[in-house]
Image 1 (cartoon, rainbow, N blue to C red):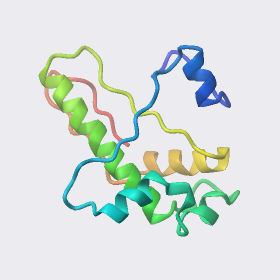
Image 2 (image 1 turned 30 degrees about the horizontal axis):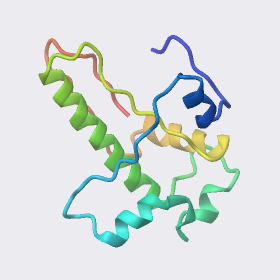
Image 3 (image 1 turned 90 degrees about the horizontal axis):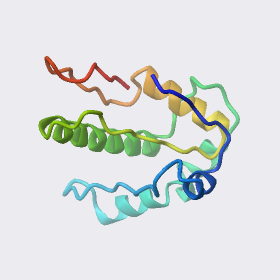
Length: 135
């Protein structure tokens, strides 16, 4: 799917090298998200329900903390809304969602959760549009 993948390359190094743009922190302005919840997402690694769990070296199939699943659901739905808007505008390629994890074990858990549909994000294919991307 991708021409090349870089592993174990720091985000700051990638930005300085011009490989990626400076990322944005996505916190959807949604009435369902209270002020405290937005703060928990912004400081997700410091959250008591996440901090110890996300630093464990466990197998990929071990579920992610609920707050992390919620964060990826919000981010994935933001990606899907952007994808829909880009399709309507005739953009030739879909947007990309990049995720950075604190440990390779965490990255494996995130990959497992996305590829095994443990995080509820699913793009529906429209006739004549991009191929189906499913998380």
